[in-house]
Image (cartoon, rainbow, N blue to C red):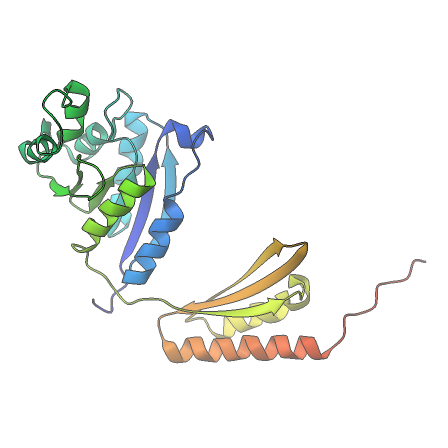
Length: 254
């Protein structure tokens, strides 16, 4: 791990996500996983199963961030075109990778390894395999792009394998302060001033609703422990001051 900031993006590929038929369960998992190892997820995009759109998004993201993680589109059907799009983005040929095929042969019966399944051994020239302990076909990495399955359990196994190869940076320190049921409108202005005063940190307010009750949490994030602690103390003091003052009475009608 270094002290530099390492950044990443996620590119979710699939018509089924955009149509709402399938609910994405990967972006949040990847974000939390990367944060724990010192990689900042800065952007997530969702694109359809259209080659030129995948290529355009991938080229934009890989030029901007240290890593790009793609999910989806590496299965056995005709609309699984991620490998082809990645090859086109890098300007290389796509081949049936002998290493990938050998691994699949070791786990499939010869009668089961049909032409459709062999599609999952196709990847761009120059790729490194990304193994997983869940299913026979591997993902792959080329350059700073890590290509993974869309099925969450398989994606998670591939992410575990890929993580060991990543350069990681300074981890974010996160502090959460419970604002209870204080409405955001009562502390928004003061919180904005605290955010300005502690520019080395990122401060956000996040409302939730559960069991018929609204609650708010304020989160302070940063890489310098002392700055995060100072900002947290300022937020706590601000909330304590608000707690000490009763809610203003509701205005009476004219």
